[in-house]
Structures are given as structure tokens and as C-alpha cells.
Length: 63
Image (cartoon, rainbow, N blue to C red; front, top):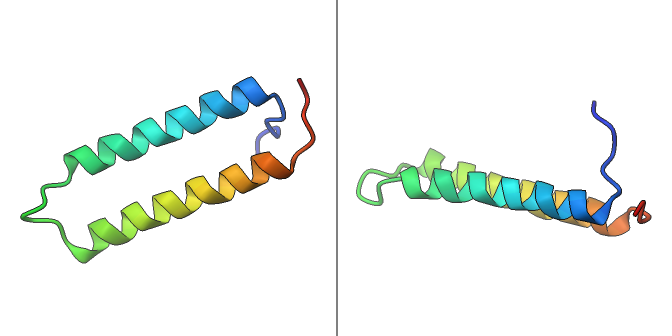
């Protein structure tokens, strides 16, 4: 596993990258043909983002 990100700027950059990935996946889904698995994957991505945000909030700042 990689080194923990404790620098707030790096945390923000990481979250921006993950949000951009989420938006790309969301944009790629066609509403007319979306399947339950597609929606489940989006929900899982949001849950992962929330988990990571909670981890960042609980870490001491390494600025």
C-alpha cells in the first residue's frame, strides 16, 4: 500500500482527481441503456470518495 497523504493540498488534489474520474464514468453512461450494475458502480464510487474524505478528515495535518 502507498504512503498516507497527510498534506492538505495533496488531499485536495487527490479528491479532485477521483471526482473527475467519477464524472467521466457518469458521462459515459447512457441513461437509456444503463443497467443496475452501472448504477451500483456509481454508488460504490461515491461511497469510496466519502470513505476517503473521512480518512483525510481524521488524519493529522502534515502541511
